[in-house]
Length: 403
Image 1 (spheres, rainbow, N blue to C red):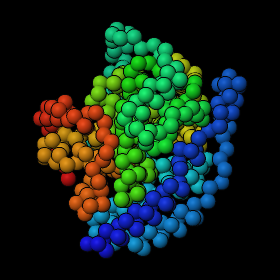
Image 2: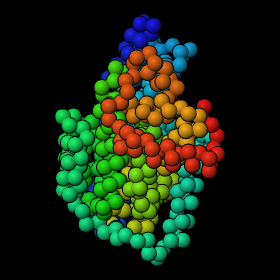
Image 3: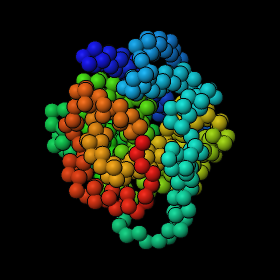
Image 4: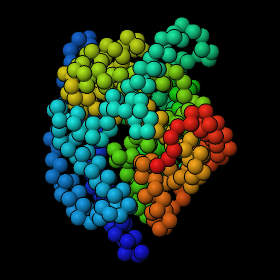
């Protein structure tokens, strides 16, 4: 047993070292000058984007050495092998920025909108289109509370500083401004970055606290404290579950709204447009027609084309994981209730992980290699409403069981 534990710790340490040198979002970000030049040309020309060369050789050599340690007949080793694949694809993705091969690796990492979801049958694109139909039906309907985005980035930063100090104490991440962000906010273990030009509604503030702080920061800190250090790394193999948990957190806390859902579904449709050959200008105009905000339309289109080809055909497909992950997480949690797998609820927050790997991770937990998470969101710390909702949803939908 001790030799098995030492081997999986060694594999985890080497995976963490390899993964930590591959930072996708940082290396596909666009300089502010790209946006400035786009609007200087009155949004009539494709953005001009260039990327530095990236040599994947060192990472590929690390992965090759790791695979020599892996025994595919052992369940916990197969978990590690999946991570090795994702890290390798990530390095190859960065080496192919600005080329058509970028899409090939993006699809391997994140999938594509038209792929049927496992054990569900429907696609993420179908869900996005369903939402679009719903938005058309409620167009012009008074939905109640005003949604003016009258909170500034500084307002969000002040609220986040208060929350992280209260929730994480001495381990609280720094809250900083970053004009290069494609999203309004981005969270990690050490810092949470906010785009200074962004403005927020009261719902946005709630969403970002539950999404970025109580899920992304919490799982980063929990993973960092685990014996298996790879659980602290947010590699693409964890993205679907991480973002799915984060969107589910918005849902279960009542902080999600139609504007948020529309942003998520529009991104899926924008990605499919680019896959089908639409260029940056066509996708930008699609967003502009939808939200009538040039700045946000540029940022949304940038999310689709960053790292890929602005003339179309090779987008960055990461943004399909928000809706896909939400469906996957919600179904999984219903199955947890139906099967009584209560131990999986806390295990989900032990670090950066994929739901499909929970059987292997449960085995690692029983080996003493995964500790109970210290930081969990309020709806996990107090599970009463969660279990009530999931019990009802499990009965209502009656979806297939947990594998």
